[in-house]
Every structure is written in structure tokens, then in C-alpha cells.
Length: 233
Image (tube, rainbow, N blue to C red; front, side, top):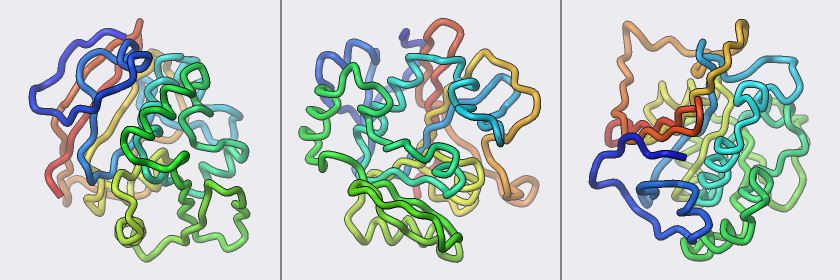
């Protein structure tokens, strides 16, 4: 991965050498933040409903995208996903090593350095009462009237860095409620055609302006890895 742009003054973690060698420049997160990670095609699609492993198709099987996914999970107290995302990937554990097992030891070292538990909580936001999520790294949290209440409950439980991995309807609610502090967006060179866009289910413009500041650009082949920071919450 090649660093193309990064502003000064970003939060910085001391990464294990194996991870720092794969992620040039600065990497860190604020002590308290909600951050999202998505991969998007050139025509703005992040999911193909009904298509197995559509995220891998959208990312064009990018190894660097899997690494960034793992790095972001390794820093999270909790990973928040919507019920449709869980149903689309029922065996996904949403841990760093599940995404990028090659450096499982380094990701575990990073979590210890940050004072985190062995695995992040997986929090499923759902209105469906019959969604079955049972293993020890997952907990169930029903959706409140808005997603912001769920984030507030997580903060009350002491979860400081909260990662959203989808889907686009959940991200839409979080963006509309001004809960998202940072967005990590992989731009894949693939064109998808039909599919879901990054934000679904909410109407922003013209009534609500949501904008972000570019906080990093990296490149791996024809993939761009973009980092955006939203305004202070």
C-alpha cells in the first residue's frame, strides 16, 4: 500500500511492526469515536442483495481491503452491524483474525496494547425478535427509535471505539443522526450496475447537509483507500 495524502495532527497508535509495514503513514483513532468501514464500486455500490459473498465481488478480492478491515476491527470495543448484514454472512465472527488471519498474533498484540478485550463485542441492531445470535463474542441489542440511542447505550456500557460495518441502511441512520465520526472507504475499480448505495433509507439533501473532510488517501494497485473525518460531535 502506498501513502498518497495524509494531513498532520492525526491520532497515532504504535502498531506492531508486521502491521506498520503494511499500512504506511499514521494510523490511530480518537479515544471515543464511531467509525465506519465500507468498500464501494466505481458506480457507488456497496452491496448486491441476494448475491453470495457480494462484498468480495465488490472489493474485487482485494487483499489490502481485508487487511484494512482487520486493522479497524482490531481497534474496536464493539462492531455494530444490522440484521440483514448478519443474515447475509451468518458465519462471520467480525474479528480481525477472521478477516486477515496471516497476522492474527500482531492484531492480538495491538488489542493488548490498547487495553482491549480479546475480541470486540458484536452488536446486532435489529427490529426482528427472532434473529438468533448466540456465540460468546456477540450480544443482541434491539434497535431503539433511532440508531443514536443504541450508540448512547453502548457508550454507557463503556464501549469507546465503535465500528460500523453495515449495512447501508444502518449507516444511513447513523449519518442522519450525526453519530459517525470517521469513514474508511475503499474505492474498488469494479463497476457493479444494480445494487445498494453507501447510504440507504434516509433523505439528506436538500434539507440536511452532511459533509466530511478528507483525512487520508492510500493506494494499492487500482484500489483507493480513503479516510474521511466528519465534524466534531
